[in-house]
Image 1: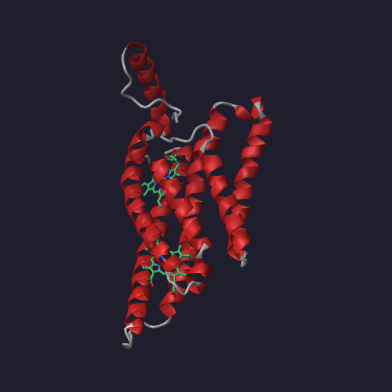
Image 2 (image 1 turned 180 degrees about the vertical axis):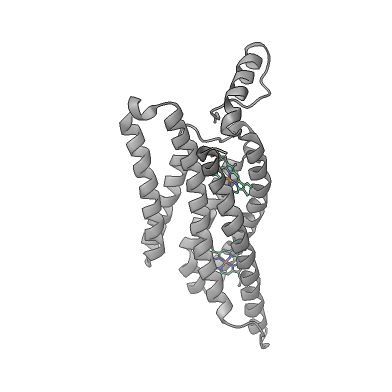
Length: 242
Ligand code: HEM
Ligand code: HEM
């Protein structure tokens, strides 16, 4: 296995070792928060300790960072892999610098979102982080599968990441809102995220089968050139196309 292949594995490894276990923990704590709230609202005593709310939010902070981090690693692998293979640095160093700065700006916006307290600043940094992800996702080399968006690992991943950022940005609104509307919004969004994560497990495993190891790339490229000259393509070209 080459260094390049090991870098490719970094993203799935982080998701499996960090993101999925945190997701299990956060769903469990979230259900306990709800159970406790319902029991107290009905005038009963609850066996669920009050600390579960705090644990849920703390885990939410870690989960959001892990999901956005894993997404950025996958995008960086796609984008910089293409920068190297197309020798973009020698052709257009300005574009490469700009892409690098965009990664830094996205990470900085997320860090500032964690620190911001006022609603308008939380909204600003949430939007900036989301924009960073979307713009990076539009770069060359990202395997988007737009023609099959309904089963695309990229689209599911970006939507899940944006929803996590949104959840992080509304934490204080959930606590302040006496009508519980933000709480309901949060539960609906989180249920969608949970489904998207299942989709990511399926499409991500498929992606691992589709991306060739470094030593396989020239053979697949050759096959692609041979087959696509004469009839419709059934093999994956390398480097990956959007
Ligand atoms: C995708 C994973 C998540 C799931 C499945 C989830 C689920 C839940 C559930 C079921 C509740 C209880 C709602 C109720 O009382 O009716 C809750 C509450 C809450 N969640 Fe999440 N959540 C997730 C992610 C997050 C994230 C990322 C954050 C932000 C850091 C967050 C912040 C909160 C807050 C602030 C509350 C209210 C806690 C309290 O009342 O003490 N959640 N969540
Ligand atoms: C929370 C879950 C996940 C999110 C948010 C996520 C997000 C992403 C994104 C945005 C990309 C870049 C677009 C692309 O190349 O398709 C990507 C690539 C990829 N993901 Fe995931 N993913 C998740 C889970 C997984 C899992 C569970 C696996 C495998 C078991 C996986 C394997 C891959 C692979 C192999 C690539 C291609 C990387 C490359 O071309 O450099 N992902 N992921």
